[in-house]
Length: 264
Ligand code: GDP
Ligand code: MG
Image (cartoon, rainbow, N blue to C red; front, side):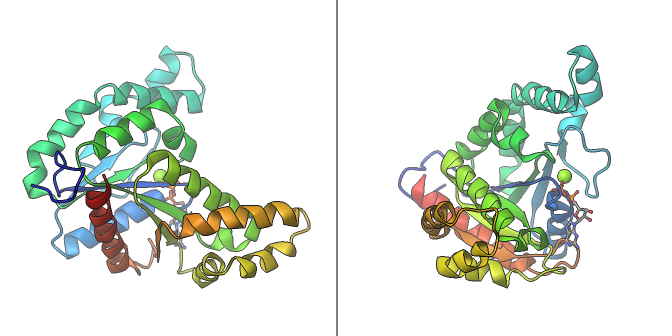
């Protein structure tokens, strides 16, 4: 049941939304807000937590890595620190991921979206074998999009903004999945400045040139790279706290899922 050229084995629904971003960007809080929105709008969602170390979740997860692997036990058993414990827990979970895919496939007709929360520390998901396995398992079965969550107030600093965009850029090229730049916390700072910097790299260079710690030639070269990157994605402003931007977010997800069906 799919259109598009190279995606004959891929269903149209559910759309997998991988929520990734730097620690503290608001992934988990945004998950909660998105879940509330799906309930309000009668959107049929399924919710997955892939953070083995989270203590409490503000939303009810249908599938939770913590039900399968106990991160504290893993730390003890393999004599690991916290990061090693989280990474190994996710690796253990990834070995059983075909079961997770089956569960979703069985419910596919009743689902519009699967929302996926990822570990607080971004690299545990984006630069690990298990993260790649999980992403690939999703993307070879369902339309899959990445919601890259940005802490907007923290990104008002041009250097932080550029680091964050370069990270998002690396995820786009690594996963080759449609990516939605999700500027969160717009209740604290509007994301207008980011849209301006993305549209006009000279405006960004002007802002960056006031930062003495950055060499202007590097900044100029990188902003040219990013200019190309920006052409390949969608961006929305949201607040997980106030709830603004939910419609825009789901519209961007729909458009990205279309793009997925046409491309993959
Ligand atoms: P995660 O590590 O990416 O999962 O981030 P969390 O969801 O745990 O959020 C980190 C912090 O940011 C928490 O203190 C949240 O209350 C706060 N936060 C998340 N989203 C928003 C938002 O939209 N607005 C504001 N003002 N704070 C937020
Ligand atoms: Mg979290």
